[in-house]
Structures are given as C-alpha cells and as structure tokens.
Image (tube, rainbow over all chains, first blue to last red; front, side, top):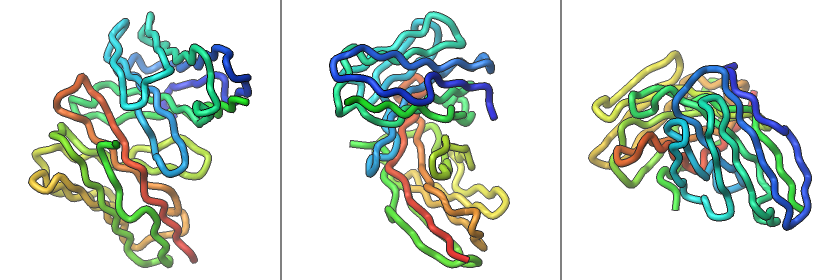
Length: 114
Length: 112
C-alpha cells in the first residue's frame, strides 16, 4: 500500500460539533484529495490540494474546509457537523494526475454524526 | 452532477463470462482512469488511458476511450469470483490543477 494514513478510522460525533480528519502521506506527492462516499453517489470530491497552501473546491465543498501547511498532511474540517455529513471519507494522493499518474487511496474514515 | 457516469449500475455474471461497463463524461479530459473497490476497502487503481489513446490492455482488462463521444468502456475477460467489486471511472479534467472526479460506479458480482 502507498504510504497514506487516515485518522481517525472511525468517529461518532454530535451535531454541531467541529470535526477534523487527517490524511498523512509519506510519498511526497504533490496532489491530495478528500472524497466522501455515499450509497448511490460513488465518490464525490470535497476539496483537493495541488501544493502546500494551494487548495481548490470540489463538487460538494459546502460545510467543509481544508488546510495543507505541509506536503505530508491534508486536513479536512467540518466546522459544525450535520447528520448529512455522515459518510465514509477517503483521502487520496497523486504525484501528478495531469501528468498521467494514478491516485492512491487511504483506507477511509467512517464518520457518524448523531 | 457528477462528471462521470457509469453504466450499468449493477452487473451480475458467472465465472468465465466477460463483464463490460461503460463510463460517460461531460468535459474535456487529460486522462481517464478505472479503479476497483472491494467491499469496505479503499480504491485500487486498475488502468489509466490518456486522452490521445484509444485502447489499452492490462492482463484481463481492456479499456477503450472515445473522446468524440466522451465515453470509455472497461472489459474484464474471463471473469473470476475475485473480480466481484465496484468499479469506478475517474476523469482528470483539462481545465483544472489536477481535479480528479469519479462516477457513481458499477457493482459487479461474479458467481462461481
């Protein structure tokens, strides 16, 4: 497996609380991604990063923020968790998808908002 | 709406048969990639096809790309029970800094 670690792997939180998910890589890849996976929707891109401090929104970015202060870490924050954010969250990394290299995925974080 | 849309949503076949699934997308791409996901696991990369390529093979996998129709197909030949998984196409868009967007996936069940 590529060197990607997501933490935590499972989390239950209450509505209205802030939550931060962490993605850590040891591959020194430039690109990092956060996706959420829900039944019937496949993977939907939340945010992605193309370098330190360089991030952009995906298709479902509302209610989420990200930060990348170091190459190896990409943090996803739910400022005030809602039940609709209950999902499985995947982090992915890539050396350069534009240069035709594949993405590698973490094992996922299962988040439940009650 | 999502960039890539797979068809069919679900596919059930017997071992030894071929499985074909299709992916359509909406905007110009650098490349298109196929991934597999076993239940409860992360995604695993299968094959990447560049926008200037029309066909690519990897083992029992064959991928085609038709940029004029904005579509791709994944063929798994001589399927095995271990091929049971969800399969996703992902597109890298030309107008982004490496945005990689996925479709909803095709769930494939291969019965012995």
